[in-house]
Length: 168
Ligand code: NI
Image (cartoon, rainbow, N blue to C red):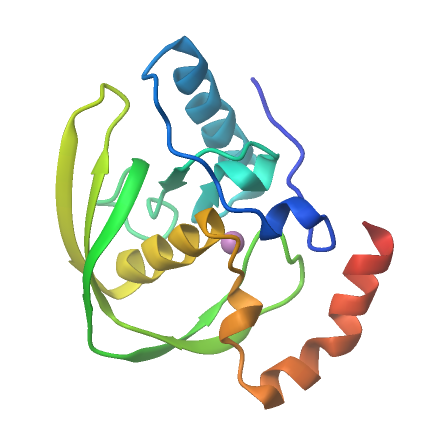
């Protein structure tokens, strides 16, 4: 098992923009396997490479915890092609332990990405998977879910954020 430590809010790497993957090699397979092991251990729904300190445009989403028909999906060099609709839903993030808030996002997404073999694919999805994809995509841009909080939600978590930052 190659579990990695999850980077917690306060670590400036979370604000960095991740770089495209250029080689679909052994290193990439190892990265995805480290992400997979780390996500499973943390029992989360999604994890991006930057959250284990690797600034590569890679994330995984695994909704099998909540939906038996789902399995782990790998997104390499993803592009969001379209979004639509709007939904409000409670979100958390493994880099923000103990913080959950309702935020608005488009509820449909069309994404293009590469899989581990370097094959391009497109996916159109709605609901939880669309939300997870957008959340993880934000990480690749150095954007965090707290950036979507309303002013009220932000003031509610101010103390918790300070504590996370102080501990990091
Ligand atoms: Ni996150």
